[in-house]
Amino acid sequence: MKNLTLGIFGGTFNPIHLGHEAMIDAFLKAIAPDKMLVIPNAQPPHKEISHLATEEDRLTMLELALADRACHIDRRELLRSGKSYTFETLRSLREEYPKDRFVLLVGADSLLSFEKWVHFEEILNQTELAVFERGGISGGEDEPLRKEAKRLEEKYGAKISLIEARIPSVSSTIVRQRAAAGMDLSDLVSPLVGEYLKKKNLYLDPTEMTRQKNAYGISLPDAENLAKKVLSPKRAYHSLCVAKMAGQLAEAAGTDPVLAAIAGCLHDLYREESAESILQKADKYGIVTVDLFSLPEALLHSKAGSRLLQKEYQICQTICDAVDSHTEGAADMSLLSEILFVSDAVSEDRTYADAPFARELAKKDLHAATAYIFDYMTETLGVRMTENSKNGAAFYARSRAK
Ligand SMILES: [Fe+2]
Ligand SMILES: [Fe+2]
Image (cartoon, rainbow, N blue to C red; front, side, top):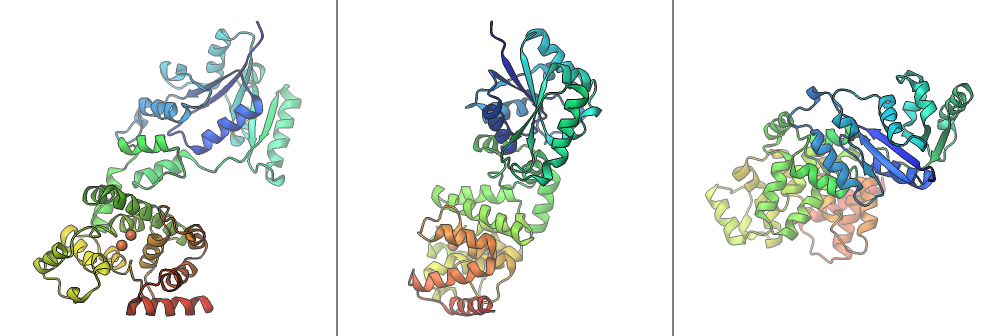
């Protein structure tokens, strides 16, 4: 019988993310193993705090992420009790595959400290190694890696393949941090894993939820649920897209992404409520600061909505202010207001011809995007500009000219 090549990739996968998936794909392509084993590590029991993922969760996410790939998820380390060392796993695999070729996928950092691994010489006797060059094509950064690979080859007869590939720089730590705050994970994990994380509230941190509730009046997951409960599916989807964009723009601007994402979830909360109902509520809560009756109906959901968010749901003033100006804009907006105004115009669900351009512009230069959107409102949409919009347009055109 022909000897097989067995690819081996071990890790905690807490959770599996797009970086892991890209590594597996590049490994399958470069090494073309006959069988690819993905081996989740056991974790010490104390790590399994309630809001963290259990072994079962980690396994399910691996299955979801790898369903379409020629991978086999091997549970031997989970079945064995206590910490598993790689040499032990390789020994047990050797019993099953006495004559076959093993190629172990390891990270660049692991290779650089390989002599610290328990029984590393035995490992090098049993298996070849495959490592990704970090910079992919860039030479300089990978120099230490190449040198170390060469040294291990010369000293121990190791066989090491260096694989060039673009691996997105995602880590499980970043996924867990963002998930703890209830933030969007779509650029970090594949869609099915993201859905699973959300459905099971994995990594969501109860302490952080309390902090958000105290600081903003609502937590991000609750704001999402509120949008889904109050709005039609289409409008709720729009709101979640705005939330995602606002979070990204806030991160890029170095300001609080959770605050921005909550504002995104809530900005259109009154968009589908009738003028009559909004005005009744305004009356009930004694909202008299603006002449709501003389407002164009399209502005009611922002101008009255901002005040109702505060009265009905005790949402913090910063968010209410941003909701207030999200439709017409204004001169000299706060950073959050500007982020919301822009996000509403460039969110992923917007399909007008210039949307992709405006989206890219927003990520690079927020003020320029604001100016661009005012121009677009006037020239392309032919919107009759309100006083606030005119002032906003003039203000941001000036700031662009500087
Ligand atoms: Fe709106
Ligand atoms: Fe909107």
